[in-house]
Image (cartoon, rainbow, N blue to C red; front, side, top):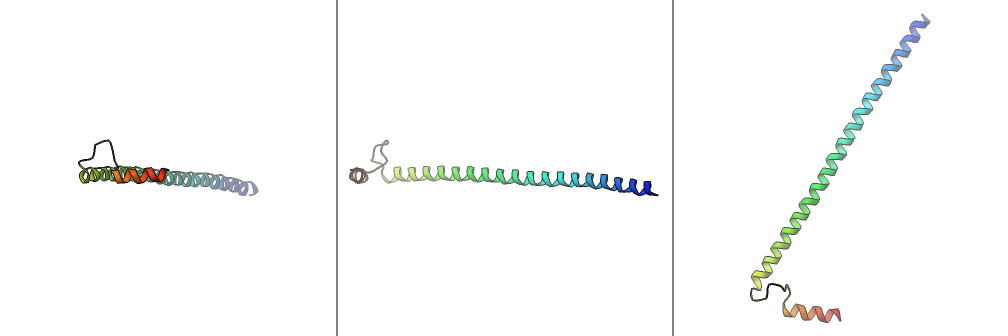
Length: 90
């Protein structure tokens, strides 16, 4: 009877260890997948922010061009803005 109990205990420990390893593996996969989704989301957010910033800058540039069509294409500032900036730099 002692050998039967010992065999049952050893078998129970083996199954318990195997179950624990399988459960840990599932938890690790779940956490890894969760982190991957989180990082993909952060990358997508940064892409959207960059795209929105670029579109905003393009719209502002178009707005400036439509307001000041007589100004040469290379300058972004009016005479008043340039003189104010030059005074501030001194």
